[in-house]
Length: 469
Image 1 (tube, one colour):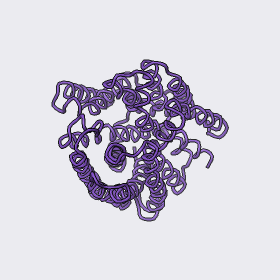
Image 2 (tube, helix red, strand yellow):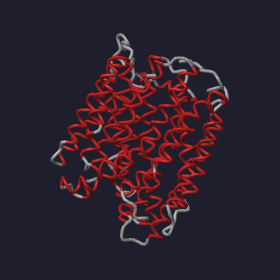
Image 3 (cartoon, one colour):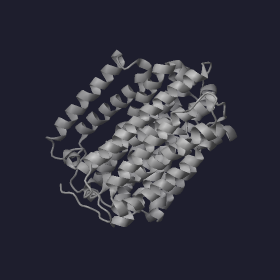
Image 4 (tube, helix red, strand yellow):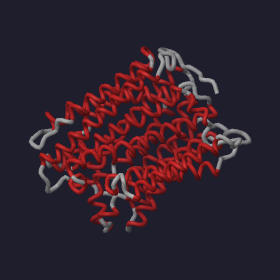
């Protein structure tokens, strides 16, 4: 249990830093004099480094030792957080955010693979993965709360400084309780594959993040997405030939793992997008403060954590297929409820019911996704599959949010979506409602995929299947 607590605490910091910065952006802009057009880079710098290097971090954990890579990533993330808190210029803050992303890309897949290899028993592993799923899915909601509370009480450096004592505590505890493990003897990192994967994922994520503003048909978007497609195709061709690939392509032939990756993209993209639109609605339409907004996400975050733990137990009793399909269907229902937000609405009537249903559904599905994705993975591939699942988490946010933002922009306008200020509230909420209906469609499509693509025997009740290589 101490191992699980330490690993989940480290992952919580990583996920928290995806959303904790959002509410603090106005204060950061005022203090450091960052131009409005460049403010997004405070978030994007972290996302690009994190998402682009996850496959490298996961494979490095397999090759060089999970504990070693985890501690290296944790140290880098903690020192970078201190640097961000002490930043006195935009350049130093952005450099620190990039280093945070680099550290997180090593820390996160190494931690997930440590859970998989430390808890080999089927029931114990499922409980551990359910706890991990709760952290991964709820971190965004708690990030909004933490960002609002720390910014209002102490100012923006506190959102980064809080990582330092937590990181030190996790590091000291990890030196005592994490099992030592050697990497793969004689293994080496596929540097050409690593460069292709990192470059392609950075181009993909940046192209998607910028698409709503630049336009989906713009030269920038088409160029970046085209470069990403060419790079990923070259990566697949390379990995099929090299003796020690960064990603063993046979992993994708496992139906359960491949389905879990797609469901991760849909599930995490849906819930993180909902947090984004609800933050704008609560602050700019209903006029709530940053701290009030953060507190209003708390009930949903609690439900999400409870649902994720319950999802792990349900997978043991029913198998993964019904839990995944049911969870994503509940997520779709929650998004439909949220599509009714109105300019004259309130938190209790317009937000809370849909938020609770959405978080309950995604919590259930998140547990099933991690259990399905990691089921039967051999120890020497645990880091690789962990990196793939975590990459799917980031790609889900990078893909689904721009799509839903574009849907909302089609009704609202890009500048209005960014601030939701000075515009007709009815128009703003109409755009949000359309985006939530699109989110419901994505979640429902994911539920249908779980029904069609998974077999009951893939992750059966009470079993821990082992897939062939």
